[in-house]
Length: 147
Image (tube, rainbow, N blue to C red):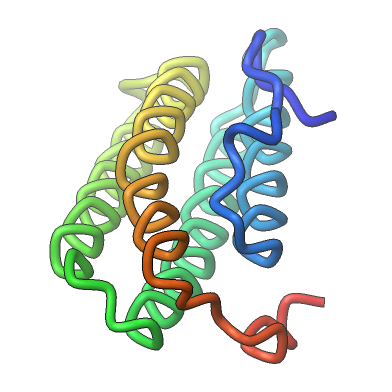
């Protein structure tokens, strides 16, 4: 099981697409790393590395998810993309503030965890319902590049 401070992955969090669920689980592991680092004294370089890795993986995941949503003609894709852009913009602000010494990794980890939980349980579950209702599940080959 993957967890973040009491947030334990459960099957009820699944969006019904194994490739996306696996990406969500990996993102949780990155959040765990950030949380773990936050418990000790973290250098600016280490905080910078963690924020960059969270941002890079979020971008990869968002790209995958958005392409999948395009492939199934998801009607709320524009709104979903906007939610993704909001996180990327916030991550850039965190990165700048870390470089300037104005924020610690704990605040970043806490924000990312809260954003992830909310996004997963609202936006992602909306498209999961769309997939269930219309039976538009992406082909397994869609996720060939995740391995």
